[in-house]
Image 1 (cartoon, rainbow, N blue to C red):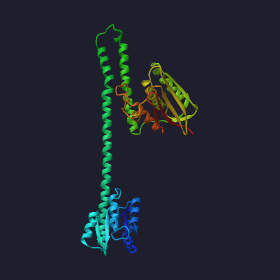
Image 2 (image 1 turned 45 degrees about the vertical axis):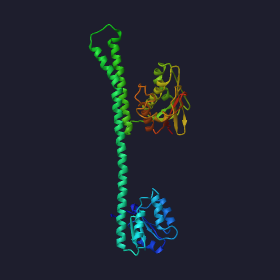
Image 3 (image 1 turned 30 degrees about the vertical axis):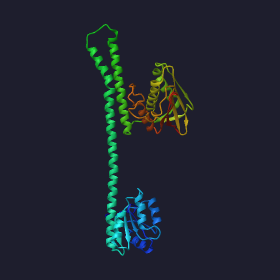
Image 4 (image 1 turned 90 degrees about the horizontal axis):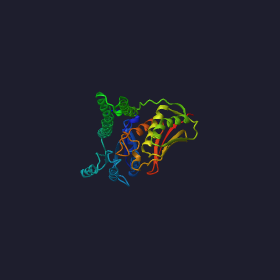
Length: 378
């Protein structure tokens, strides 16, 4: 077995009620192993429970709790069941050796023992223990890599499903409209070139927005989303977000407004990316709030951060949906295909890249409040 640095030396616990035996084994093992000693079975179990060693040398005959009882306790504890135990005993009867091995000891050394043979046995069992630990660690790592590969495969399948379903509709619109443009001119105003061109533009814009979302999500996953944080005041940032989304809200007869505390606070954020967060949160509120409802952007200081809240008077979110609300490709209504389920996931990623956090409070029938924080300057 190779030599170990002091910091990585395997640990051997020697358990014996005779001080001379403890001193002898400590002297023999010192330099190759970290040696710990216990003079009773009870003390040994406490030491093992606190920090399991790599191997235990255990005297069989001890007053109080003897070695066999100690071994039984070790085997009953899942945390210590796999620690190899070598019995040390002056009793060399074959039946005792068989009993010890049946209890789970890996070896049985009788006293007086041959020092070279004893050290060789300890080395062999230590080598087996360390190899077993390495194999277990490799198995855990293999499981982790397999889980990551499965998640990556599912993510790729999600992307394929998204592209196949959500790009097909606008693409079909473009193809059918192009076919109409190829045909003979008609007097129908609905088929005028300007109308058809507008239809193509809107369909292409939907495709472009989806592709942009997919690229943003990939950048977030890779930790490569570009975020250029600059000092920006709360008031103009929120005002721009409301102004940007006002046509969408008014088109559905919704009232959209802002109510901000400490509006002169400076934030450290990427203006464009934060407006993207607002667009996703307000757009989501517009989507699910009935005509005549209200959406309010609130803001207040929250310790070293500033908290924005997008509050709506919509139908609210059920308790079973709340844990999934920021999951990608997830939608609360299985029949609603107006979005692909990326917006809230992207918003969460952008907020995280700023060092902030995002969450939602909602009750069915009482509307929803989406909160996110951004770091303040100073």
